Image (tube, rainbow, N blue to C red):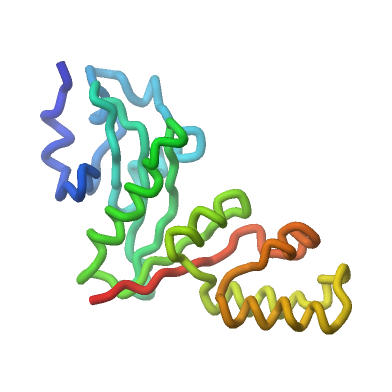
Length: 194
């Protein structure tokens, strides 16, 4: 039997099967008492991050276990921007990440003008496929580091940087030739239609 009593009080919405919570505690999530945090499913999202930041978006297995989560909240200095702090799936290749992101976007429409996140190199391609692009700050950092892209002659480098500005994405060749010259965390954004 799935225990739902406490956490359902903090569930504020359900978007396409994704639960949206505010203030839910790790101990309230399990399919039976005391399941979490003893059997915390995530590697990168810690219990303190889960409990301490903004809105929690979750996907569950049929038995009630949380299999994917995304944490987001408005920026303190720009309440029109929703900032994704963490996203993680326990089970890969099931489309959970895509479902979470689409649910966040749908939930945020009308409340926020854009979604902002910091992507690592390994997840960059996922975010580009989901329609996210470099924000102005990320483009400026890449342009400011132009002298570090030594694998290219001036003409090649200028063409690559022009592509960065025009497409607001990072060409694969920069990842291949100069991953260390790129920001460790790449700031990306998606504008939301009102």
